[in-house]
Image (tube, rainbow, N blue to C red):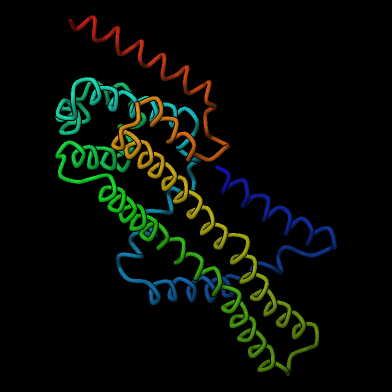
Length: 295
């Protein structure tokens, strides 16, 4: 939604300012210039990327129209989920988590947090490392190194679409110049026309430079920044899970491990210590009531 709003502001500001100085919008309507710039940019995108990169970019584009899915409520759910998992393993042993991690969708603990279960990447990240912790064959340093490798791999993968879009954005001003030069060539080849017509041809040629720069810095390049921000948000969640699980593996109580994880979050979404403590207390109470009912 913010992307669309930004596009409206870009178009409104540029065209509005142009009209205020007496410009005519009809002069900017040059389909041939758009064909040259857009077609060349898309062709360069295909040439400069592998099939995997093109497919990854296509999948990433719909995400640009969505807002951030990681807010304070999601983080509170994540903290509560991790707390309950760690509390259960502390009270009943790590082997008690086997049923939860084998089928998270049917787990009593996971099922109470549908927003987390809906995020397959996060669920897989949690479950995979809980499975390694349950096996007991790896120490904390080995698991931490493996987590860092997975997070780094994810960062590299999700940066591919951003780099691809940034490259296209950087090329569009040059393709705008190409379109302008071709328009000037056409104008010079028509030098026998009246001065008014010749001036119109040159003006049309200059539209190519304008469109190339506008498309690059007003439309395409900003998308690369949005993709990098979304990647950073997901990476931050994975780092939060990493710190929390490693703290538990190193022997810290669930309350302390969750506090360690809270400290890694961005300040804009990070719950306060009191908020998290109250939320954890409510989780403990709910879990105890559920356990009493089952008994």
